[in-house]
Every structure is written in structure tokens, then in C-alpha cells.
Image (cartoon, rainbow, N blue to C red; front, side):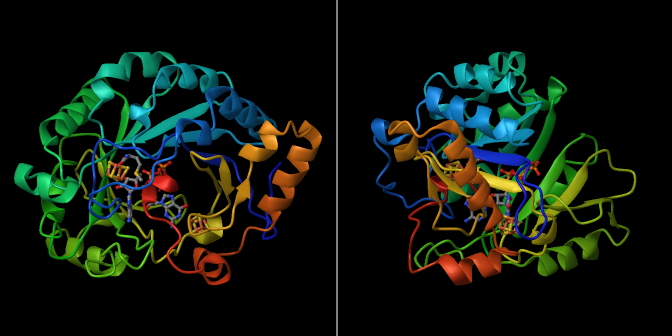
Length: 324
Ligand SMILES: Nc1nc2c(ncn2[C@@H]2O[C@H](COP(=O)(O)OP(=O)(O)OP(=O)(O)O)[C@@H](O)[C@H]2O)c(=O)[nH]1
Ligand SMILES: C[S@@+](CC[C@H](N)C(=O)[O-])C[C@H]1O[C@@H](n2cnc3c(N)ncnc32)[C@H](O)[C@@H]1O
Ligand code: SF4
Ligand code: SF4
């Protein structure tokens, strides 16, 4: 089992398979992109599956594919088939653009839970936020996933003065559809990303929701990445993710693997365990397991503590290097 020094068991791996993306969301990546990893700097599928086999034996039961945009990595369904043999729970976070093309193959491989990122329901605003013109495709992906009966969540990064006038429109999506709409705090990850300027806190979002929906009920105890609510009578749920406030760290069960093969024990970690060179040097499995065990054990109590102890200046050019 993977247990940290605070007694939390880590059972959930967020696997970022690429740092590339077909969008350029302003809160995530600079317009010109970043210095993307060349192919040889990425973990290949054999390496990913080997590592995942080790982690499955150490108690990881759930994997979420993320990125960058996971669906731009070539032959992704091949990887998903391999992961499907290792883990009972497989999920993906995606911008949806390529999802209709791969949905059947992914579902056959065991992937039936999709978090789709969509920050606005207005086409012209979609272009302003993502710098690309794919509103129709993203919406079509969401419709398709719901129509096929798969579990779907909609991720909305809320930005003050940009899309914070759309919270009610998003909640209304849950009236007749079994969707979770999740409002996410915009997380600053370096000094230049502009996310401080548009930040709207968990508390401010909740206040805004209660003005229109005074009967909003909290439906979960705190846990996972979100606090979940429901409007009585609506089919779906509404949630808020305190990505920056970090109020849910006490029950954190997450471990991350970056596209370049670095293990991170927190979203706010910058000094991870670099596994790619170790794998390529042929590290014996028992030594690898011991290193992972020690690294996980050192996980700090909160994201704030991780940030305080580890971050030195602008380390990440983009959220795509971490996977969110
Ligand atoms: N602070 C913090 N934020 C997180 C963490 N995991 C996810 N988030 C935030 O939540 C956003 C949405 O994450 P998703 O990729 O949809 O995954 P998830 O919320 O873990 O999804 P579930 O498995 O459905 O709970 C991310 O972009 C982050 O901003 C976490 O461990 N810590
Ligand atoms: C990095 S993306 C990768 C997966 C996929 N490309 C997508 O957008 O769904 C994962 C999640 O992180 C969120 N995200 C990216 N940058 C963020 C930021 N600065 N603050 C909060 N969430 C962010 C995205 O909205 C998305 O829901
Ligand atoms: S949030 Fe997702 S879709 Fe948007 S740029 Fe980042 S990786 Fe791409
Ligand atoms: S900030 Fe770090 S410790 Fe807190 S929930 Fe996120 S990954 Fe876990």
C-alpha cells in the first residue's frame, strides 16, 4: 500500500500522457505554446504500463488520463486497453474535440467516465478563452457522452470578469440531464499566467449560487477534489473545486505522473521523483518500489505546505506539464 506520513492512502493516479494540446486555454497555456517534450523525453506506452503495473500492485485502483489533451497522443486506445487490464476504474479529462472519434474504442477498453472541460456556453467567448474555434465540437462531445449513458462531468474554470456571469446557465444544464457541473477556482501556477487577476474564490462562487438557488443543498461530505451540491428537483449535480483554496487536502488520495515521467505527490509539487531515467537505466523492481514508497511517504499535509517548501519561482510554463 502507498501511505503517506499523515496516514493518507494514495489510490488514485492522475496520468498525464502528453503536454501537447489542440487548444490554448488562456488560464492554462501561453498562446505560443510551450517547449513541448520531444518524443524521446516522453514515457512510452511500455514504460507507462510497466509503472502502472507496479502502482497497481502497490494499491492504486483508479487512473485518470489527462494532459495536455490526452486524445492527441497517438494510439491512445492502445494504452487504454493495457490500463483496462490493470485498474478497475479508468477515467479521462478531455476538451472533447476528438472524443467522438475514439469514444467506442475507449469504452470497449473500459473507459466510461469523462470529465469534459467547457468554460462557456457562448461560442464567441469560447474562442476568446481557448483561442480556437471548436465550441461546436466540444458541445457535441458532451451531448454524445450523455446520450450514450456514460458518466459525465463538465469542468468550468471560473474567471472573474470573463465567464462568472454564466454560473446560472451552467447550473441549468443539470435541470434535465444527469450531469455534474463543476466550477473550478483558477489556479495560478506561475507569476505570468494572469490567473491571480481573474481569481474567484470557492466562497464567492457559493455566495453567487445561493443568490439564485437559496435551496441549494450540499450532498457530499468533503472529499475528492470537489464539494458537491444539488438544486432540489434537478437531475444533475453542481460542485465547486477549491483548486487554489485547497481545503480538501485532508482526504487527498492522489498521485501524479507527468508526461516526462516525473512522479508528483501533490498538484503543487515541483520537486518530484524522476522515474524515466531510472527506468531506462534498468532499475530493479524492488528498488523502484522502495523509492516510490519513500517518495509517497514524504507527501506534505497540504498543497500550501508543498508550495511553501518546494516552489522556487516560475517552474511550470503550463498546467499541461502537470495534468491538472
Ligand atoms: N488542489 C487540487 N486541485 C485538484 C486536484 N485534482 C484536481 N484538481 C482540480 O480539479 C480540476 C478538475 O480535475 P479533473 O481532471 O476533472 O479531475 P477530478 O476533479 O479529480 O475528477 P474526479 O476523479 O471526478 O473527482 C483540475 O483542473 C484541478 O484544478 C487536487 O488533487 N488538488
Ligand atoms: C490541464 S487540463 C488537461 C485535460 C484536457 N486538456 C482538458 O482541458 O480537459 C485538466 C483540467 O485542468 C483544468 N485547468 C487547466 N489550467 C487550470 C488552472 N490554471 N486552474 C484551474 N484549472 C485548470 C482544465 O480546465 C481541465 O479541466
Ligand atoms: S485546459 Fe486542457 S484544453 Fe485547455 S489548453 Fe490546457 S490542456 Fe488544453
Ligand atoms: S493540493 Fe496537493 S495535497 Fe491538496 S488535494 Fe491537491 S494534490 Fe492533494
